[in-house]
Amino acid sequence: MFNIGPMEIMIIFLIVLIIFGPKRLPEMGKSIGKAIREFKNAGREIERDITEALEPKSESEKKQG
Image (tube, rainbow, N blue to C red; front, top):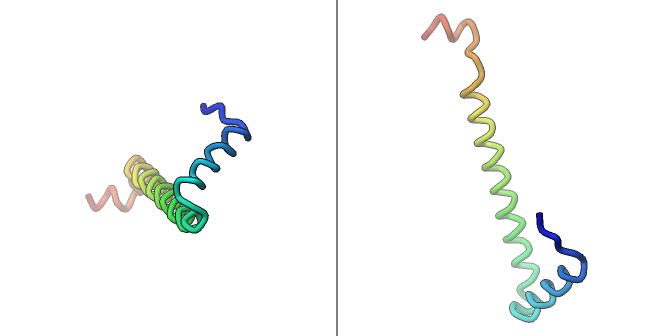
């Protein structure tokens, strides 16, 4: 997908460090981690909802409606 090697990652890190400064990096890391975690949770919820919608109903549910 992305062909990023260690040198490119280091350059990106240095640019971010210069732009935002060392004091804001931990805060940014926490917020990025939180956003990724929330995105994954939302994906799991969507997957679960789709799976539940596609599963055949049990016999008792079929009799009720």
